Amino acid sequence: MSLLTEPKIVFAQDIIRMSEKHIVRLTFVSSTEGEPVLDEEHTDFRWLTLDEMRQIKKLDEFTREVLEKKFCEICST
Image (cartoon, rainbow, N blue to C red; front, side, top):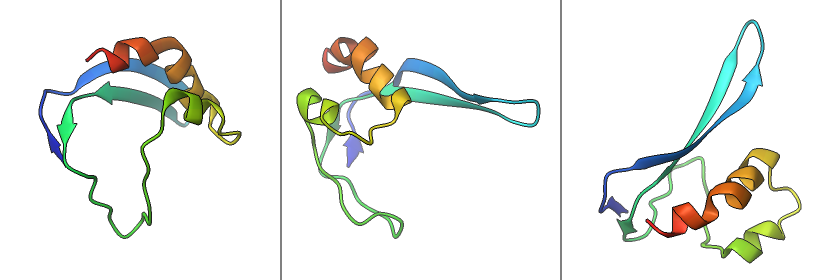
């Protein structure tokens, strides 16, 4: 898969904030071409619509927040 545009940050989230560690999730958007190339840690991928993603019960709260708050911005780039 190749990037066609410069990645743009659309969301930053504090995932864990503790005295010994602080984890921030950064979500980027870019236009691409081609198919993803999986490494040895992954066995499959799939493209989903927003409605299909909303139906995933195990979707973590942080991903769900990005979808609900930033999906229109992500799709317009």
